[in-house]
Image (cartoon, rainbow, N blue to C red; front, side):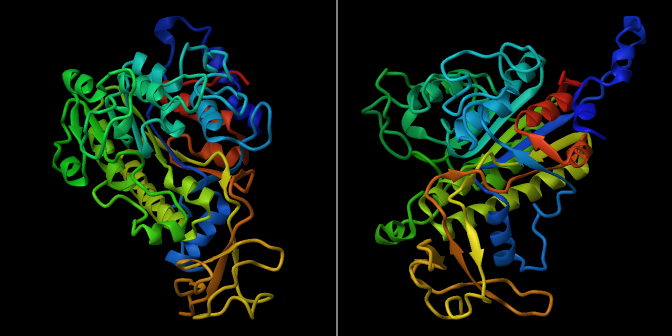
Amino acid sequence: MQRRAIFAASTAIAAGSALPAAAQPAAITGNVIFFHPDGFGVNHWGALRMLTVGPDGRTNWDRLPSSAVYLGHMKDGLTGTSHGGATTHAFGVRVVADSFGMDGRTPIRSLSGFDGSIAREALARGKWVGLVNSGAAYEPGTAAFVASTERRNSLAEITRLVATSGVQLHLAGGERWYLPRGTQGRFGEGAREDGLNLIERLTAEGYRIVYTREELAALPADAPKVWGIFAHNHTFNDRDEEALAQNNLPHYVPTAPSIAEMSDYALRFLARAPQGFLLVAEEEGTDNFGNVNNAPGSLEAGMRADAAIGVYRRFVDANPNTLMLTCCDSDAGGMQVIGPGAQQQVVREGVNLPERDRNGAPLDGQRGTGTAAWMSAPDRAGVRHPFAIAWSTLTDVSGGILLRGVGMNAGLITEAGTMDNVDVYRLMHRTLFGGDLPA
């Protein structure tokens, strides 16, 4: 089926629109889970596969049955940005790269014509919305679905907009931007200059506030509204390997729930929604660790993302009226795997890697630059293979990215074969509300 046929209004729908209202068939709708492992391209997933299940194994991501090449260019550039890409996903409109819920500094309507994002349209139509992020509340992968600002670094204002969005559930970090400067929170001092105490406001509005994995696990699934704040900033420490070792810091905050644990609770909570739900979730560590060329951190973040995909897949298997989509908007750091072969003298078991490849690309081993090569999980013959991680940049690039999915309407992904970033919105809108949007 051609892409135009998939996403343009079908002739059957067009014919049906001429029928009397009583004869109109009811739109078939369902739930949507959109998961954004930020910055994690095909090469990252390949490295994760080799490390965790071996070259012949399959991750949860591998087992998603529908896939298409994802095109993430912006209105003014070829490489997607986190805030511009999230805005395109949330509104179905391609925007300039420096956008956060707007087109640059210009307000936008969504592709459906609604004056707001797909999350706001879902709320307006009586559906529940949950946002889950391993980063702080201001991270655009989730925040751009409910917040519109002219500047991405307006962290206090973005957090305020998220906290007043009316979503039924929000789980992330970022406590410092909920509290006024001088006010001590669970994890540290607040940073707001406007005197607002957003935690007090959320509590007054009936949200149950939780701060740790244990507190989240103790919450009943029938809590009326839930807000999790699991770290002073992100739930991870996004520095390079050497800085983390010097400061004796782990990759992730030990008391914070993982993206899989947050998602598991979110789905049990949202499953009660009488008219269905939209869950937008993001593993932000996959991007931030790649952007500092921290291979161990990037791969740990990838393991967490893959565990979350397992949670989503199990939910879809039990609730087939749910669409689960996953993609990233760019490739963080341009990660590549180098194995033995042409590099037989460089990539060997138990031998420290050189700091750089012959072309100057930084090489990472198990503990960072100049450390022992990684070892894959066994292949089907039981052999483990050494490999190195090479980085092309510290920034985001237009790497190989797939849009993958399972569940309701996911077959349209495979039929399309190649899909634009705006098509993420189209698929979500079709599943949540029924019908097709114009091409």
